[in-house]
Image (cartoon, rainbow, N blue to C red; front, side, top):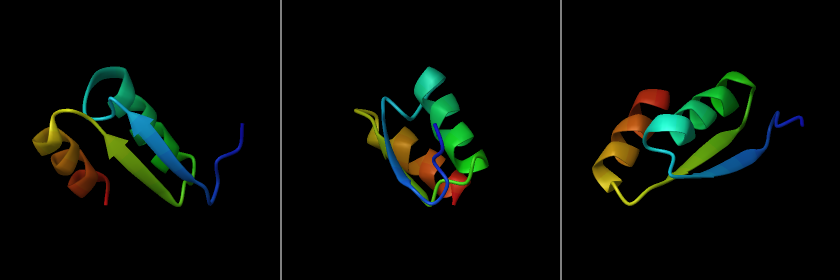
Length: 51
């Protein structure tokens, strides 16, 4: 599946497999990644790291 220039929502995205998916989406050219997780601090931290 091509995700270039798409916005992707990743549930459970602050750690583990969800984090890996979020990172991969950025690497594959996604225009943005919405990181959704019950751990808001971790999600915010990862979002800041990914830009």
